[in-house]
Image (tube, rainbow, N blue to C red; front, side, top):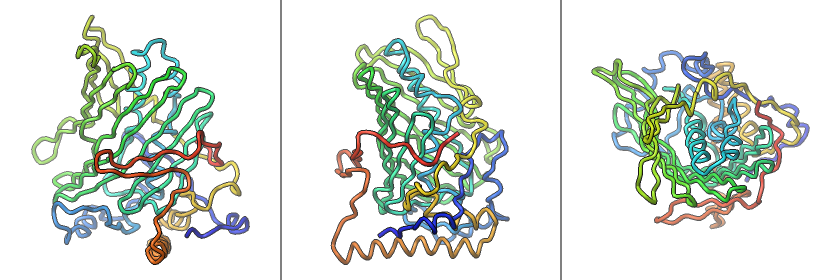
Length: 389
């Protein structure tokens, strides 16, 4: 049950379009959303939560929210880029050239996270539909408990397609929160008949001794047709009392799985420079520069307000986002309760009728062996009324 929005109502709603998350060395706009005494408030929030607890159903007060949905954050990692890295992947002369470009693109989807603030948990059926150039991106929240997001993106000019599903699993460990991100990503370069599969690193929030947010874990990238494989390790070490250390490190290697030969070493920082070293001749080159790719990003623009779906994130959360931006926390609390109660009503309705939710844009299945599998209903994504710059 999704409340329909008339044309008149759409004109009254002030749609909030915010900048993507920026690199730490830039002026982070999300700093403006933080409430006073954030660490103290956060510690009190988790005072009665047991270590090891699953936080999937945990609801954050608006004080700790960014004015955007998690769907938007997932989408930004795909369409917010200062350079067209997907086209570079497609134009590589050899399978190895294309694979290296895909590795660089995969690193570019790792975006800065900020301690103490988080996006909204998407409601069931919520969508996010954005275009940038010839790339059209569509996300849908296909499950609420557990939370599962499906993504489909197509670029018909370059003949590129992306399909993936993501399920965040947050757990509390006393002095830290780790968000394991389950799900498989697929990037298809259809002109070359190549499919690349990859996973996502995990997000680690350290509360004590020094608050921080870091991506950690192992990412495996493989091309099913060529047998090329990349193993990337995301690390963030802290010295005594959390001071110093080496942050946002990425190390790895590119392997020819048919011969088990290591072709290249990968080394650098995902928020700065990542280099590739040729094992054969020792030559080193830069394959990714975060400053060039994810700096100076601007908020998207709205091309046609009347074409924005009622389920679009900016419609669902418009009143809450406006309240957060104006720091009207009482209004924010009320606006969030309205959305959450609408979600509960939807679930009660389906339970009373003994019906299952059917996503609009994806066919969804789940097995213990594979996990969540989301297949887009349509072959391509249509152009969107929200345009990324």
